[in-house]
Amino acid sequence: MPFDYKNTQLPIAEIIPEVQQKLKDHNTVIIGAPPGAGKSALLPLCLFEESFLADKKIIMLEPRRLSARSNYMRIADLLGEEVNQTVVKQNKFITKLWDYN
Image (cartoon, rainbow, N blue to C red; front, side, top):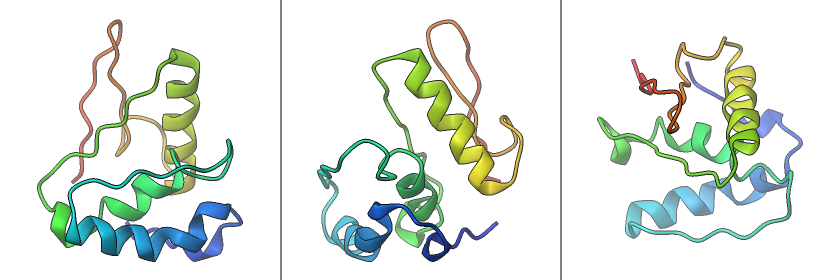
């Protein structure tokens, strides 16, 4: 299920190679970008197939259920899947696991 971020028009796509390299070298990266840049939707997709994240989870925290719902629906849409195939959700009312396989 490779995802080609180069086919998107989101501004964050320009820095994805740099973010991937920084995460290989360090365990933390802080990214600031305006809303809609692709931080929460595009970036996780580009990272979860990285070899340095093998057998690890990507956990995303969102302060509001509406933004969390929008993000997991957008990520599933970018993958061409329904929610709960690869992208799943967990909050205090709904619990699902993220299945990477």
